[in-house]
Image (cartoon, rainbow, N blue to C red):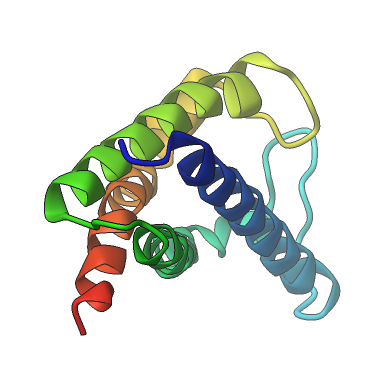
Length: 142
């Protein structure tokens, strides 16, 4: 990896940005579209209706940040993009276990809710994160 520090900066800014977009979408659904909020039985309609959009947020934002990272390299290559995508997806997979399952907070989920009931969305999200730097690299070629 040519610039691990910059890669991590772009990754974490993007990860936080995607999370904020998802939260804002949920809040919009609850307060503007008057969907049901979370309760003791689950995350609620406001969140559930955002799920199909999650891969879209990720492919757009991780491709943008992948492009920004790849554009800043002195020698961007497809190999670099694949390594970056693999590292970003791996970090995300590990961090999500802690941030959304193990550490309990109002929006945390059980292992079953996050990895089984959230299918196919969670798999598509991880694929989008992996492909983000690759798509970013391809935009560098244009």
